[in-house]
Image 1 (cartoon, rainbow, N blue to C red):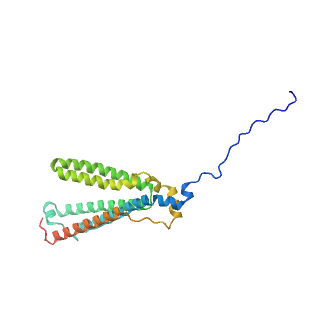
Image 2 (tube, rainbow, N blue to C red):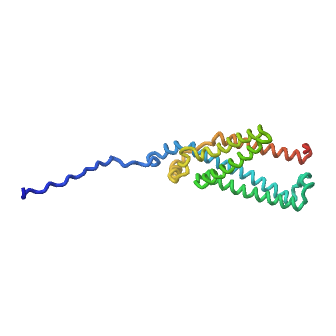
Image 3 (cartoon, one colour):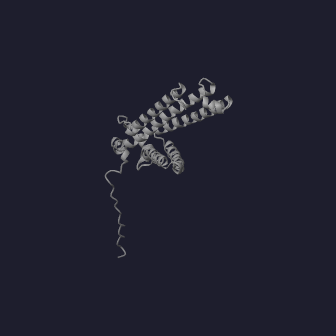
Amino acid sequence: MMGDAEPEPRRRVISMPDEPPRDPTRADPEAFRLAHVRRESGVRSLGVLCHLVGFFCLLGTLEFALLARGILAPPPELEAYASPGLIRLGSWSVSFAFLLLAIGQVALGYGLTHLQAWARWTVIVLTLISLASHSVMSLVACVAYPAWGLVSLAVGGAVHGVILRPLVARGAGVVFSREYGEVIRETPQIRGRMSLLLKVSIGLILAGFLGILLFVLAVYEGLIDL
């Protein structure tokens, strides 16, 4: 009929949830930290290992600097093939190279122990380059010494894999995120433990360094004739 009022349009009712979805890092920061603390410890362990390698590079810097200054006498075999000036120049060059390596290792160690994304990708790229070059050298060595070449290939692959694992494993990117850094600040009572890998690596490095040191001292004292 003409006098009837027009029906009102139907209103669409939207049901709202009782609570908006919450960020898991905010819902329970402690549980979120505990779920990723093992990955965090693995990354920090790599950072400590970088610091240790940097320390030994500094020792190499000091040794070759002392050799260049004449405080340490060069081996007689080296003096027979090179002049004192060339030995001095080579020693300064090697000392400078060790210094650059030490600075790089300390910087990477700082970045990894502080969970910086730039350090993660830098280590990944450098490790992949090192893995490729090591694999090529090992395969070339297999031509002359098959057993040693295969052992070098296997050991080198395992070492590079151990380095890459905590950086490229599933969920590794979480510990480098800004949100995870905020969770760390909110849960200072949670601390990761040094991984078994780091303990074994430090032991092997220290044992190797001690063995090299004893060998060099034995050569200088004449106990070992090269």
